Structure formats: structure tokens, C-alpha cells
Amino acid sequence: MALGLCPALAVTTRVVNGLGIGAALTFVLVSSNVIIALLRDVIPERGRLTSYIAVIASLVTVVDLTMQAYTPRLSEQLGIYVPLLAVNCLILGRSQAFARRSEGGHTVLDSLGIGLGFTVSLTVISLVREVLGAGSITLFPMGNFSGIVKIPVLSDSPARIMVLAAGAFLVTGYLKALFNWTRMHQPRSAQPSQERAV
Amino acid sequence: MSYAGIILTFVFVNNFVLTRFLGLCPVISNSDRLDHALGLGAAVTFIMSLASLGSWLLFHIVLQPLGIEFLQTVTFVLISAGLVQLTSHLVSRFVPVLERFVGSYFSLITTNCAVLGITLIAVRSDYNAGESLVAGISAGAGFVLALLLVSTLREKLDHEWVPEPFRGTPIAFISMGLMAMAFMAFDRALLVNLVG
Image (cartoon, rainbow over all chains, first blue to last red; front, side, top):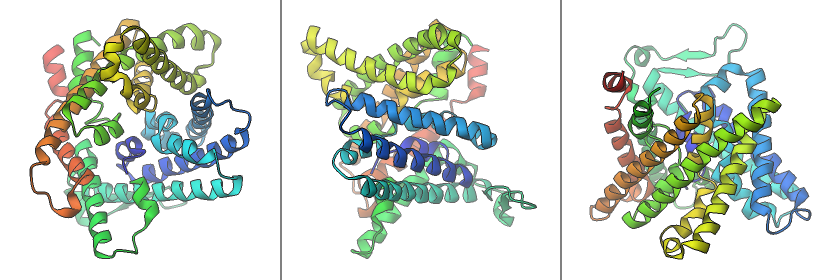
């Protein structure tokens, strides 16, 4: 439950940040699992954790540099939280638990699922925070569309606390409680992927 | 920035856990008992100060002269992991008494975002060696402070009635949110008034 939280809370002040960090995490998760699965026989038992960390950190560097080159504004907003994906417990935990024993194709699907689940939860958190805290929804600018949707009443008097640090904790706490509540009321239909990532 | 300014910044104004969300996983999963919180806090602070000094040295002596600053993430992650391994080895070898208290926490620290966070922040803020060390120590102190506050809160919460869906992590998050709100009192303006 508490896996991979740091980026989840820190950057989710705008919807586009949630999507961005989710995409970055999904890419790193999928490709690191593939690489580790391929290198499984080469990596010695004793140096396992270190080599995993090195692989993940290199991939994170790739993502970070790509984002700096193509989406400089997003990269500025995400700041140190992109390099911090290198020590994300979600990624490392997955590599440890999974890549050791499963075969390639299955690994890719599994980590893709987890990455998407994480992205969805981040997007939900950032949607709630941005709508309540800034009264807008920031997406990618496309053509004439500036990428920012203003919500009439809320953008005049937003609850600023929601985009600040305290709001992140509150929103996550309440969303998690809401999630528990819905699961208690419909025993079998909860979505497991979201549960894992929030 | 002066040393006093750095200490105030990292302990209160930009408290790692409550405003920057670094090192959150161990706070959520390990803060239900006070003595565990103290052991973890001590280990993290120690590693953070070492890592922030070590990464400063490596960045300015190796990475910058060679022009390979883009390798900073990889290097810093490996330094932190190496330091954790080294320290846990040294502790178990020479101070077995201490191992009983902090030993089991070392494995948790390898993947602690706070450790990598402080190295990245120190380098990106252009701190010198002394400032990096002080930043590391005070960020660790801020981590311990937040961990203590949250764990005492959660010990109290154990004796209170909490609605079913809120039990466990949700209520921990909400109480941390309230704590973060209290920390909003420490802002830039306060810092400027105190140290100029």
C-alpha cells in the first residue's frame, strides 16, 4: 500500500504532472524488468541489489534527460522527483519479487499493469487536488487549446491548501478511506491494481 | 545561505517528510512504535549526512572535471547503497551493541528517497562541502522530528475509535496532513526574519 509514495504526493499538484510521472514510472518499470529478466543468469547472487539499482538508475537518467529535452516545462515542475524514481520502492520491489522467476512476456504485462494502475491513481489524486486547489485542469497544450481547463466558480476562490503539502496528505488519506469504504460495500468488485499503487 | 539558515530550512521550513514527501514510506510503515522510530531515525540521519558529503566530493572531484554530470543519479544512488552496506558492516563488526538497535533498519535505508533526495538537493543548490554536510545532518534531524511526531500521534490513535474505512493508513495520512498544516507556520518569511 505505501509503495512508491514520494512522487505520488509531491508532484500531483497538476493533472499533467501526475500523468507525466506515471508515464516515466511505467517506462522505467517495464524496461527495467525486461533488462533484469534478460540479465538474470549473468548477475551474481551477491551483487543482485546493486546491479538492479544500477540498471534502474540508468533508465531513470534516460527518462530524465529525455524529459529535459522534449518537455522542459514538465521536467522543471517534476524537479528532483524524476531522478528519485531510481529508489522508488515500487520499482525495486517489483524487480526483486518478480523478474527473478518469471518469463519475459509475462513480466512485461505485469509491470505494464502496475505502471498503468499507478498512473491512474496519480491522475485521480492530482485531479482532485488541482480542481479543488486551483480550480483548473492542466493537460497537454494541443493546437489552439492552451492545455488548461478553467472551472468557473472554483478558479475564483480555490481552496489553496489542496495544492500545498498538507492537502496532498489529506486527499490521499480521504481517497484511500473512500476506496476502503467502497470495497467494504462491494466485496468482490474492487480494482486490485489501484489498490497496490496508491 | 548561512549555516543557521540551512539548519532552519531543512528541519522546519522544508521538512523532508512533511513538505517534500521524502522518506515517506518508512514513516508510514514504521511509525507505529516509538523505539523503532528512534532507531530508524538515527540510522537515516547518519547515512544522510555521510551521503550528502560523499556525493559532494564525488560530484566536484570526479563528475565535474570529467564533464559527466548527467551520471549524477546513477552515481548518487550507488554511493548511498554503498554507504549503507559499508556502515551496516562496520556497525556489526565493531559495535555489536549498537547493531541491536539500528541493525535491522539499514536494509530499509537503501531505498529511502530521503537519502538520494538530500544528495540531489545539495548538488542542485550549489552548496559547498560544509553546507552539504550540515544540510545532510539537519535534513536527517527533520526526518527524526517528523517521525517522532507521527509515531506519537499514531500511538495515541491506537486507543481511539476510528471509523472502519479510515483505520490504518488513511487516518495516518490525514493526521500527517494536519501535522503538515502546522508546519506551514514555518515559511520563508519566518526564515528571513530570523536569519536575514
